[in-house]
Image 1 (cartoon, rainbow, N blue to C red):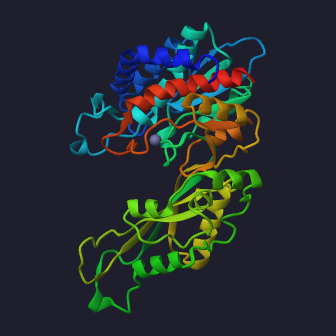
Image 2: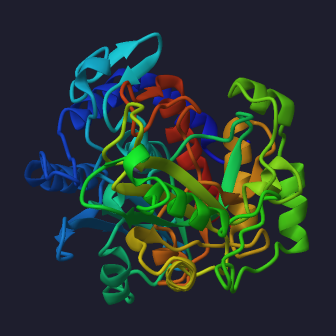
Image 3: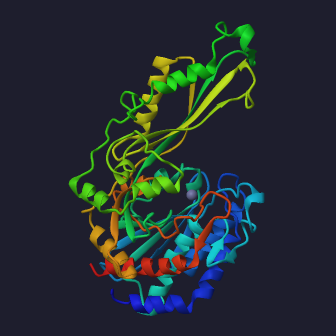
Length: 450
Ligand SMILES: [Zn+2]
């Protein structure tokens, strides 16, 4: 058991209700970056939260929604840790599907429901409360800490890399930590080392001005749906291999240590598939499930014909494919975009491609500085050996820290697997919120004991 972890546990137990109330108050401040709902009040509220956590904080303008940044000093020569989180949330989505109002915290069966409970207010609040817990139980912090709360994560953090680069000196640190997303499917304690990137795009093929009678026009008018599906079939083969030249340029194979870490992760492919109602695995990329989840992907998200949602015997006028690619380490968003654009231009020049927000992949190796100390901190908090996850399947703007600031980054996800982030009835199991405070405190004290 790490130094002080027991007293933090006891402290967290004693302050449960107060901590839950603080989370409920934070949920009651909408902060929807996509629409701007509540943002004007949310930024000063986030600032106040940092100040309450004992940090000297300020608002940093970005050109979009601002960042909130705060510092607090640990002992001289102690490591400097950056903690990244985001105070913006997803829009509520369909209100009729919520069992309680999205911006009014409601506790049912040990879970707090509300938009942002898991993603990300509950998780960065746990980090902030850990600072307070350490101060109150240990008399001070074991390391220097800078907290960065992003106001634009849910819209792809378009200004984060640039803003952090301009703050390079202030953010000269030893490592970064982040808490977002659900814990590992197996519920084993884990530390995320890398994060996949993402490129989203939409391919549109247009035909006639409006839908045409398939009897009067078949074999005469080109069918955008056939053209689009043919184009898509040139992009990924039935065996799952992506056939777009150069899209995977730069992908670096996993190191031996990463492969070992991947293979150590518990996974039950049959149960995973059955749980999703599946009886077969995708043909793409060999290897076990965890290796597949670290590799590049190409997904068709939806296929639509704008003017033919019910079955009518027509030739549609427009066909649209919405797609995304998850990027593995070393793959660059710009390279992927160029490769997709060139492929479409070569195979179906009249198709239009429009790219959405992108995020780069990030990588921290299992033997990077502080990796062992972060794992030790999580292990001590749980009383169970923590495992390293080389690459998170989803995407987060962590490359702004790994590539932009050259920091090793460690993700300590706190939320339950069924947190329903981005969906109605988002929730955070309260015992995980409280355990998250202990875990965050334990990691900082492990880093301080280097
Ligand atoms: Zn999110």
